[in-house]
Image (cartoon, rainbow, N blue to C red; front, side):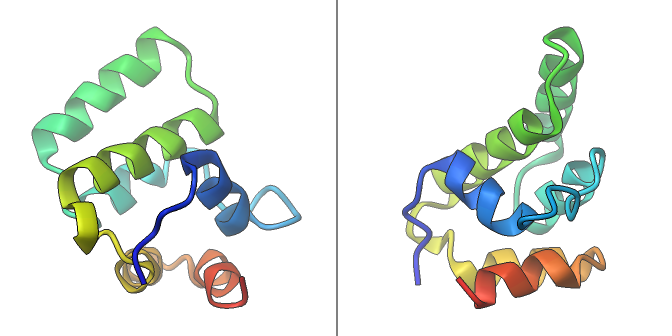
Length: 98
């Protein structure tokens, strides 16, 4: 299934009701597992620092870049695999149960 939801909705689903399932800096580990280039990750890191991104803003930007770069290959399965690959099984479970 292709992820065709607004980026902030993806974040809200994954982060769960507790709003603490996604650690603030973990987006840097998830991004390359989603196929985002190191150059784009570095650009995002700089942008996040300059604009003092919140956790939600950083993850939302990762999901936006991922969908722009991967298009129809930005699937729920790939997102779950990326989350599980960085030991974030609870957020992955939130997607499965959505």
